[in-house]
Amino acid sequence: MEHSQSPDGSTFSKKTWLIIFVIGFIGLVSLLRDHTSHILSILPYLILLACPLMHLFMHGGHGGHGHGSASENDSQASPEKQRHNH
Image: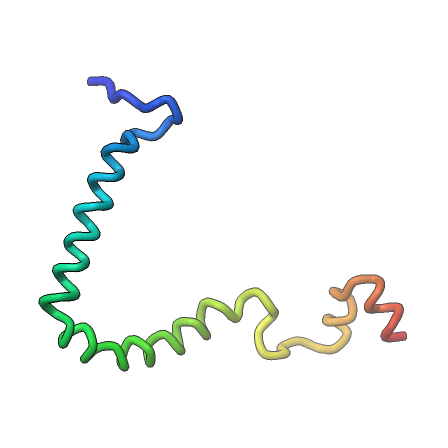
């Protein structure tokens, strides 16, 4: 069984994606309309949960909280920063 692909290489056509989007939007509106009180009651917990998750996942890019010696930091600095430091 072969699957046909649209000219841009995706499996679904634009019409299929539009139908999926419309059904998802209708489901989301229905969920919000019928269960607003449930969603709003867990919102404070979601905000509290977001804090440690952001701390866990977003501190990887800048080297943490100053761990390591100053000589390691100097060796990793760009040559321009090393010239300004000396």
